[in-house]
Structures are given as structure tokens and as C-alpha cells.
Image 1 (cartoon, rainbow, N blue to C red):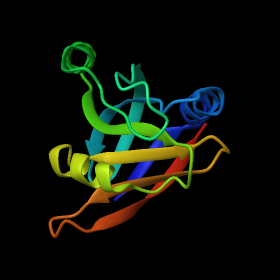
Image 2 (image 1 turned 60 degrees about the vertical axis):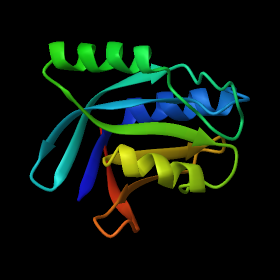
Image 3 (image 1 turned 180 degrees about the vertical axis):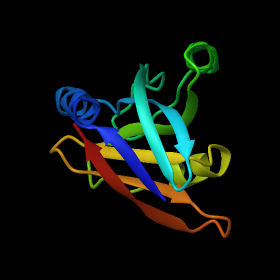
Length: 133
């Protein structure tokens, strides 16, 4: 499995993460094609916890984003959020990954990033990221 992400989407996420004192978050919208997950749009969401160490998205905001994706013919293929430390899944992320079994793109405020999935055995697997122009 790999994620195809547009350069300007990654750049926008990294810029917001660098400017923010709290974790940023949102959805990756696109389509699955074979072993690839192709990101067409990103949708930022508010971190309702306003926290530098965890995030949560209001369920009503999730519904709005999912409705928007549906109208555009896109699927919610992943989530993204930032850490102020190394961009790997935290314990809370792993719990969330059990509910949202799709791509989790994690960035930090220094420009580092990684994509992860939780496999059927509940093991974290890093996913290849292909940056497209």
C-alpha cells in the first residue's frame, strides 16, 4: 500500500503544523485504486481539545466533511494530524486507528512526516508516501 499526496497539500499541512501551538488535524479525501490511496483534497478540522498533545474532531464537523466528500465523489481515505514530537503514532493514535482503519498521516512542526495504517493484527505498518506535483 502507498499514499499518493500532492506536494502543495503536504506543504499546506506542514505550514499549519509549524505555525500552530496545538495539534492540527483533518481528513484526507480521495480514492483507493488497487494498492494506492490517492489524495485529491484535504479538509482541515478544528481540534476541539485545543491541545498540544492530542486532538479530537467534533462529530458534527466530521459529518460536514463526510457530506462534502460525498458530494465531490470522494471518500475519507485518511486522517492527518500533527505532533510536537516525532511523527509516529502515539498510544491515543493507536486507539483511534482501531476506529478509523485508514491512512493516518502524522507530521511534526519541523517538516517531518510519515503515514501509517493499523493492520488486521493491530500492528502499525508504515506506508510509502509518493509526493506528486
